[in-house]
Length: 88
View 1 (cartoon, rainbow, N blue to C red):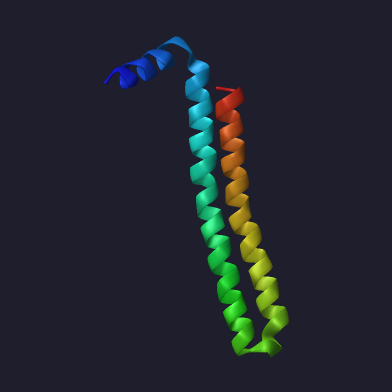
View 2 (cartoon, helix red, strand yellow):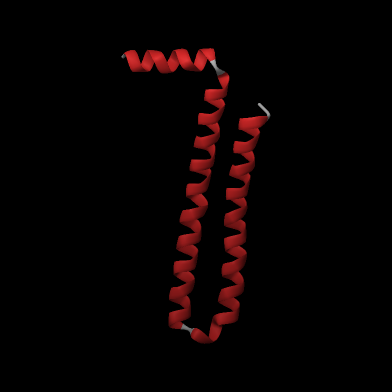
């Protein structure tokens, strides 16, 4: 219980700690989704290439587009974390 009270006191005394923790959580949770999505996307693309190697160009184009969209979500999480850390 003493640890919980000391953490609560730390947050009330210094708002920079809360900002740092909030930015870290935003970036951590915002990075998990794109990482899982990219892993699944590339895995399925490799399965499709294994079944039908002739469709390489079409599969590769769609895979790169999907990776770009998934990575954009990670970039949004980074921007959110930077806003939390330095602006708010």
